[in-house]
Amino acid sequence: MSLVTTPLVDSHCHLPLLERELDAALESARDAGVGHILCVAVDLPTFPGVRDIAHRYAHVFGSVGVHPNSESGVDEPDVAKLLELADDPRIVAIGETGLDYYRQSGDLTWQHARFRTHIAAAVDSGKPLIVHTREASADTIRLLREEGAERVGGVMHCFVEDWRTAAAAMEMGFYISFSGIVTFKTATELQAVAKQVPLERLLVETDAPWLAPVPKRGKSNEPAFVRHTAEFLANLRNESAEELAAATTRNFFQLFTAAMPVAA
Ligand code: NI
Image 1: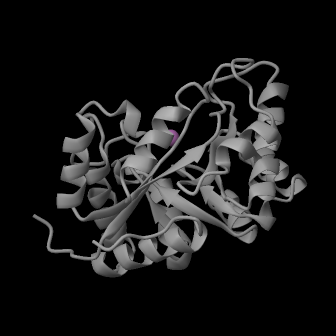
Image 2: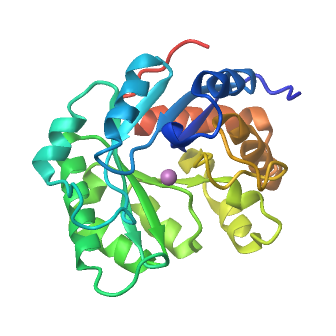
């Protein structure tokens, strides 16, 4: 049992996809000291499920967006559609969006177009971006710059890129969020990056149901496990777990200004 009493935020997870029953998983999260959760959308057909959860639980917020790996042409959103769906007090962010050259190759013009659409919707709505980038960091930073993403900011979620990418994103007002990947034994380069990110720019997440942190690696992930990633990071960075929990929670509400905190 952890002695840390400062509540954490799981800044990125996919609650409709959890293996466990939702109420049970949320109760475990509470027991693990997870005070708030951001449930992230990946496409439009499943968005109503995200929205319902965000309306049902006061400590869970939602986002709207179409993942870069979501099939092209299926319910492709335009800016107006994203703005319409984001016009909801429980929807606090636009995403997840971004670029992924790892899982997809060939002509990815459509991925660029989709990303630009999301950046425009974020700027228009004033709701920050949740950015996924995988083996596409140069183009990701370039598109964010070209579309003026610094006007709204956001988070580089499940960050696995190099320091240069982190620094370029932070220059545009972005936060850097680490998932369970940073706890993996082989993730030494990423751990070096995580050590350098200023505390006031740091977020933690599970990306549940994927990527469970050590010591839960290989299991189906859930928001309660964000505790392990936070404790690992605190240890890595020579900070107290309390300090890291307080800072990442403060950062979360500073970024997602539409998210209203509830008392623990
Ligand atoms: Ni995700």
